[in-house]
Amino acid sequence: MKVVFKQPTAKVSEVFLSVQGEGVYAGEPHVFVRFHGCNMRCAFCDTPQSVAPEESSIRSIVDRIVDANAGNTAGAITITGGEPLLHSHFLKCLLPPLKEKGYSIHLDTNGTMPDRLNDVIGAVDIIAMDIKLPSSTKDKHFWEEHLAFLQAAKSRKVFVKMVITDETQESDIDKAVTLIESVDSGIPLVLQPASEFGEFKSRPDVARIMGWQKKAREKLTDVRVIPQLHKIEGIR
Image 1 (cartoon, rainbow, N blue to C red):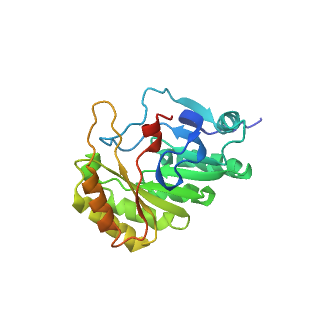
Image 2: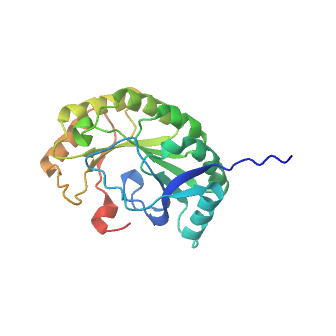
Image 3: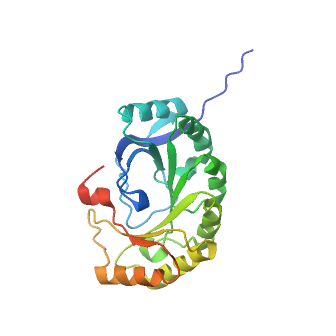
């Protein structure tokens, strides 16, 4: 009797070519693979929920990436979501074939699942890790998870993003900066003012942002303020 092994699948909302709009690699052409689902509900989340996810196989995603990047515009793939590490076992199978095609693999993650990071870190080149400030997200804190995650992520190129809103508390920023410093003061930190969308209008003023940046630079060597460029320019 022939045994047929079921191929792994995952819920994927989108595969598309665009310009990286966040963090220290903003402006680079990337192919984005957006996985469906998240373990958080951030107040400022602007990820489109209207895109129906498809149950996708490894082969179908690779084919969609090839189609999206038909002109060989992008040399990097951003794995994003939602929270892509909800699908870590699937990523463990997906990422090696992409590496074999010569792509640089960027993982964009909320940094709350250190155990799942260990499943895929061997195939990841760059990690864009969020630190979710509870005063910004209106969700519970993840300080312990963030620390364990960053300690694991430092074996790769990693930078940290923190979305800041008008309700962000300086004490949360101070705690996050101290956390990063305890791992490596050279890890870049991006302060990312929340994008306005729908009824969400909670943006901090420039003076507060500059003050937070100045204070963070007392402990960290690389602190930047970078808004979501794709939102400003209306790019997907």
